[in-house]
Length: 328
Image (tube, rainbow, N blue to C red):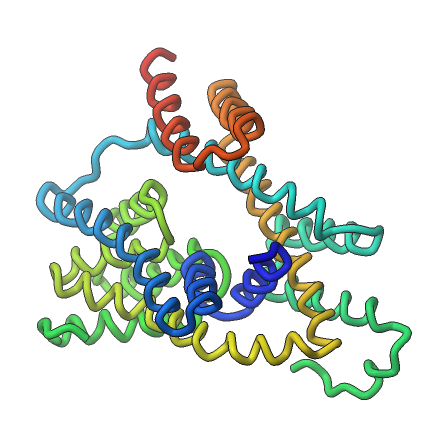
């Protein structure tokens, strides 16, 4: 897959509701092997983290608390920032060229850091690049404005299923927005305590895979294994349906001169948004010499050993964070 095509899929993912990382995996599977690839890629991306989260959910239900993992978490966060930074730099060099693209990328990045909705920023960039790349064409003047398993389906499970189906179908942007929905849908209605929500956020932080897998943890706490299954199915079903329905249309629209320009703008915005996420994460974790040391070690390792699997960097960051927490 070319970098351009990868960015096209990433941009389309930003435009539809649901967890971006999961939908990106599903997009790639569908792009490579049709509906069979869609299912295989999506299930393989989701299944491991659901198992890991389910184990944590079981022991949490048994003992009422999570293990002490803070020492590992901040090392993992620093390693992830280094991984994102080294991944985005080559893409930025190849895809953001010329004064117009650079200025627009900076504007989108600043907008994201200051809290402007990322969907609005994506659309803004798409429209700007469309106009800029077709400013000498009369096409612009003629266009219309862009405008289940055999488990207990009890009342509790029905409620869980409908809540998470709704969230999966309408939630835009980062998976962390999920926690705001959980506050409204579950904590305020008494289904989940505030402490449990905090613990859910912790699980989402230190388990691999999409943050949306946190709902597996919630489902188990509310109604055991059947709750886990129904909550997990509900949150991810819209992603499969949306990717399946959108990608054929995307392939058709990419042949359009105007949509191709619009997609170029979305690609630029996607890279700027990733940069903004990196900046925001850095602001909260690069707070003392230990954190900076871990970050620099991870960054140097990634730059020196370009083919190293990022999982080793994340594991090393976690271990380094734990060692520093013991001795300092």
